[in-house]
Amino acid sequence: GRKGRLLHVGIASYRDPLCPRTLYNMFTKSVEPENIRVRVLQQDDPKVDIDCLEGYCKMIAKAKAESRNEPFDDSAALPEDYAESCPHADQVNIHQVHAREAKGPTWARGLLSADFEGAHASRELSPQDHCMSIDSHMDFEPRWDTKMIDMWDLADNEYAVLSTYVAGTEQLGKNLNGMHEVPHLCMVTFTSNVRTHATKMAQELSRPKLTNAIWGAGLSFSKCHAELKVPVDPHTPYVFDGEEFNRAARFFTHGYDVYTPHRVYVLHDYHGSQSNPTTASWHRNTDHDAMKASHKRLKTMIEMPGGESDPNEALRIRQSKYGMGDRRSVDQLVEFSGVDTRNAKFPVDGRNRCGNLRWVPFAPHPRGVNYVPRYDDETEDPLADHFPTWEDSTSVWYDPSRVVGAAGGGKMSERDTRMKPMEEDAVEEEEEEEEDADINDEDKGVGMNAINIPHRDHEAHDAHENLHRHHEELRRAMREADRMEEEAARPVISNAEAHHNGGLLGGALRGGNGNADGGAGAAIGGRKLIDRAPTAEHGWSHLPLTVQIVAGCLVAGLAVTLYLTAGTGKGALAERYKRRRRKAV
Image (tube, rainbow, N blue to C red; front, side):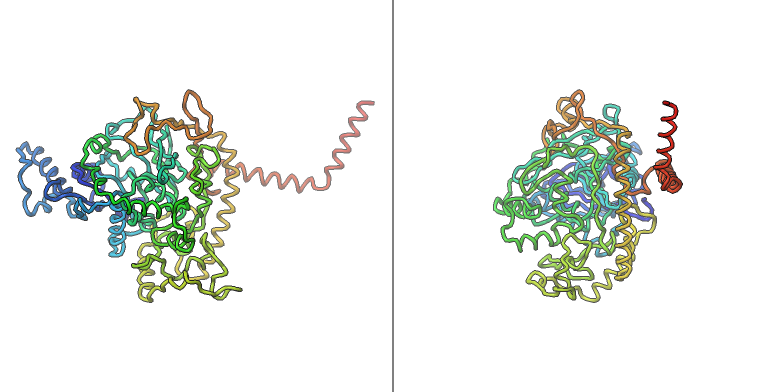
């Protein structure tokens, strides 16, 4: 829900004259502009380029003049107090970097992540606020802000991240092909790293669709705890290929699930941005040695050949601030996504991952969804706070042999000695911060019974027990869901290039021409038919009421029947056999 929550927007911009228009569309088409906070990482040449905020305010001034039928001089300088007459200017923060210092999109988005982290530290941003990351050349449907939040709510998952390569601005206000077609990411290819490849189109979705953990940088919408726990890695300058799957893998292993938005409310100006060569000129400054080191780091994260050869250093990187999560394993990532990073193979088993998927359960952190781990400012190694990774039994890196006081345990390795304890006052500050960030209304997702647990061991234990019971219910519900899938409605997933001479998005998308089939699957007339079971719903409680009632009656009836007939089966069969014999005689 929206109540009491701000919407924080991060925009990475490189010498983009469309950035002011993005701000203008964002604020003027929103329902609650007063709740929007924008951080722009502006990489430009101040002597040449248009300042994003000043350009936005000029657009506002022009719109006001036109509404009064007054002339407007676009070349005139804004007054010193323009911010006072420019609505929402005080809600926009410009992080200025000279264009000659730019080092690519991941480096820029990494600085934005640091800005989000700083806002969290100063309590300007709550983990329970909503966060959105977009490009600097976007447009929006009217009421986009409330629509995006409502759509996120439909995922019914506290750990949901809405992401895709959004449609072009020429589709603004249109229902594509009369079937609400939306771009759906589910394919990758291997280049120097892992690259999101091709785009399918999903039709007539009733809610966001669970993907195989494929994430697109052009649009990412979630609760802010996702941005805080999975910040963009700033140590990967000059990277283009590999950025998206790396963060997707980190989201997944931290427990987050990527969903395709079922409606298009945020759109991308592909033509306007790609027809301007200046906006991609950061490539000219590429340091190829630094780029090579970046790819090595990304490969280390996802256990791809060509990464760090020292296993201890590789583990240190994966467990560092910008490393992998410990809620799900890389093995689970490979099986779920179909992306075999260790052998550069997709799909790993030949199966298409564009249709219905089985959600992967995980154990939420015992300190709750709002908990953001702390790391050493210099080494970026995790601080040993209440739950060191190896002592947390819910972690995929749990190692009982390293737990102090356990049988055969207690010996500290070289890696362990690098873990710095948190200062006592920092622990107290963190606990107060998490209490302030408690969820006020009913939150959704898997294992949410552990969200607001105070930091006491016995309550953490109770949360674990509740979680195990919840997952047992989930496994039973999944068996029932298999039966229900056969009766579910079926939307169509088709190749993007099947529409409008190369597709709605065509070659403009990072993924390429969109003609990859992506593996096995029933096809009719060149289109794949993919079941649309409610993949975002988990647990017995999310099954339809009628199904719960019928299942309950069947189980009760079966139990009564077994009780009444216990021990009489053989006698009844014998009596029926005798009657048949007498009739035959």
